[in-house]
Image (cartoon, rainbow over all chains, first blue to last red; front, top):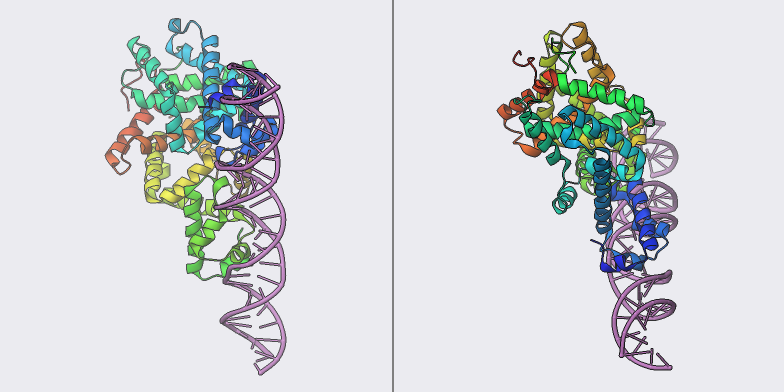
Length: 212
Length: 212
DNA sequence: TTATAATGTGACTAATAAGTCATATGACCT
DNA sequence: AGGTCATATGACTTATTAGTCACATTATAA
């Protein structure tokens, strides 16, 4: 957590520091980010930085937290009537919203992706344990409900499927941004539906295709 | 590519350098690896290092190449009668072999995972373009054959499915190593089958379950 | 106005990094 | 023995890093 000193600062100055941090953490892997560059960008002195934060990790954790909050806010906004959707409708909304979030908040999104893709397990554990959400648990919840409602195959392994979906929700967005124009909403929908088709029916040839 | 000087060295000395490099690249993200540590571990001087390699990337690329070769060799050994297997049998073999490779060559495996999970697209592109394989293309090939043989749903998007499987082949191994005992072959098979079940049939409740 | 507290500052230290270079060693050939 | 060439060396340079600290400035309160 930033020190009280930081929160006493004028809003504008806080924003300058956060903006500089966001830019830095979005541009480099964590281990290569530099406090020197951040203070230069934010136009504050080295001494000030250490009066606001314990160290680099302190700022990083704060920004990750903000990114996570922002994404939650965004998703809640996009997916209002969540209880009324079927599992696959909800999944579809989540993927689409994920792509839109990346468009709307590219820096936060990049930071989040870097964090999740990172292999510093100790750091991840530390940050996870201080904030609750874990998209994994969210998927576990909606899968349970999907099974209860009879929409999902009760034979699937819930924890594993949740892991798979978490992984996918990142992977599909990356795939899209690598291979297609992220502005094109129609194309987004097209790909999300392809992905849902596979999640729903699998890839085996069977007589199970054709029902939405 | 290492310089000729390196290949002129006694085999034992080459191995010492490679071993030190493997250890370093397995232990840290690329940007944090240190030539200083490598030469210390390998017990060679700084000057010698630069007589063997242009720079850190030169050694890194060489080691990535070796890891990739080693994995290919391993897979070819494990999966001999590849043409005679059905698509899902082959997929199963690939996942199991992937987990076994991680057990047998933990350092190479770690380096490979770090490389694939890395977000340095320029570096990846550079290394990819110099070696052909790309597991992605392999999946495209076996998916095409699976469709041709009538085993796979011809309506799936081939490129996207290949991307999905590539992603999965990494993800499932990570999941396994995070959550289970990687020595336990029975448990491995159990999880691989769960994953295949989902890939095959999807997660939707339907009348399509129950046939292997 | 004066005293106290909060905030700001950047030169400095101690590590560490990548890369260079003049010099040294030793093997092989004439 | 003398000469040539590949290999080996580590001190040195330049750049960058995280973090500290004595001091300066500004704001608040008495």
